Image (cartoon, rainbow, N blue to C red):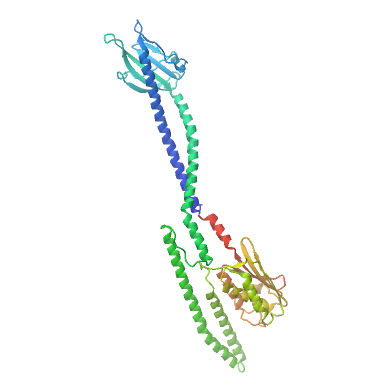
Length: 460
């Protein structure tokens, strides 16, 4: 499964590329080190060959002799890893480190006063890097051509290479951590405009501003312009929808009033027909009220939905309902936390909660209880009464415009309207049995920070 976080994907890609670059750099540095080490070793062996050439002479029998042998103790230790050899025809002079072995080489000697680098087998089965020089000693009449070979065991070079790698690998590892940390800071800074955009979108959601500001880099600016165009289009669509709903409602009011008047007029002669007409007129009126309520609230996708405090709106509603019939004699209990905020405009909350409180007022015997709570993920507003309550089947039928009890005034659309308003705000309206014995209506909506924290963990 691919990670959804852009920061994580960029970080992993950068770390992979840095690791690949450092591996290639390590291989290149190792090759360079090997070449430099071999060249330096060949240079040291050439200097040793020149030193031996300066010390060599001929004995009376014509054999080569050294006035002074090289001082490096490895020349004296059998198979010590450093060897020299002087050939004068069939006569041979060699270091003690060769013991009873001799250094081979090409049959063709090196050019006079020139050096060449060779790879030779060692006396103990190892591999040697060797430098060969061809020098002449004596007078022109009695000149003797000498072949001088100085060699070193490559295992000594391998030890130097191992020491180099022991230093190189941790250094590259530390460099990887340093570059990865620097790249993480770079990615963090590069994604800064998106974090700013997220904060500005929150401000638009909260209703603190109507449009997104344009202080963004050129790469992000087209996205901001498109979002602003989307806000403009949404606002125009909302205005048209509200105007259309209002026009429809006003257009239906006169025909509904006429139907109601006709029902009353024929009530004395045709009571059944009058009742049918009155019922249909009430149903149509309820549908109109529901359509108007939907038009007044912001749609679910509105980017500029505001939040409003719950306690002041509920207190005003309760104060109003106390003065209505069947409300004066009820005991109203309101307990709401100060930080409880509804994710919509105050008018939406007043309409939704007003329908729920009015329903509780109609059916309560003595008590109506309003309570709220704030949780880490969700907030709740609960309205309960001690009325007769409802069965589960009746609760399941709420919101369909069906009258619960014909003995109470109303069309049954109040609870449906409350549910529509709750849905538009991203809240959930549920009904159940109250602890007081009657109906419990509960509005639940997510806390503003809950969704954003989850998105932050999965996002940039």
